Amino acid sequence: MNRANEICFAAEVTLGKLAKWLRILGFDTLYEPDVTSIGFVDARKKNRILLTRTERIRDRNTSQKLLFIKSNNPFEQLREVISALGIVPKETQPFSRCIRCNTRIRQLDKDSVQGMVPDYIWGTHDTFQTCSICRRIYWSGSHTKRSHDIIQGLFDS
Image 1: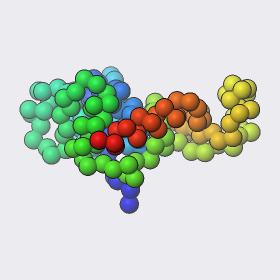
Image 2: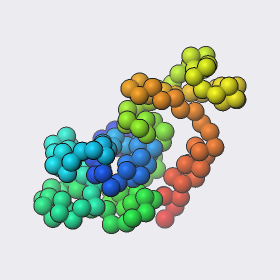
Image 3: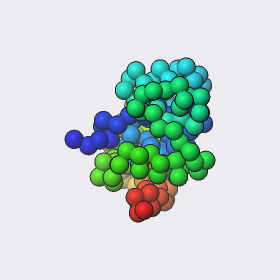
Image 4: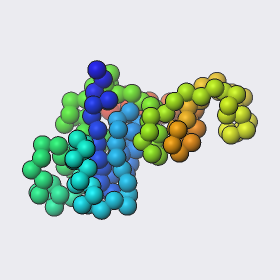
């Protein structure tokens, strides 16, 4: 079984970019900027690995399910998580989750998005995906290639 289905995270408010990239990699990542530190710590009840930069939370938490993130750089933070958990590329599912709400995205019929995406995009792309919760529509654009390059670089260490 792919560990992307098993590994779940809860990222504190200061780790928004890390949360976004964990979602891009396909990991279930709870991130709610308005959740208090108490609510954040309560996320461990849901079997999530807590990601924090707050020393107070690190020092109070005796759980093995906490990663204290040291770096300020989101890509270094991502490397810290990958290294600490021994994640390998085949355990990721890039572009399988909504980066806004964390829901798994699903394929859409091209005709169903006509008028919902720019005409140029509709005319030049055949594959579209959507989030069933927030209704965001995704397609493979130039950002996807750049993101794949970034992902590849994360594992080339």
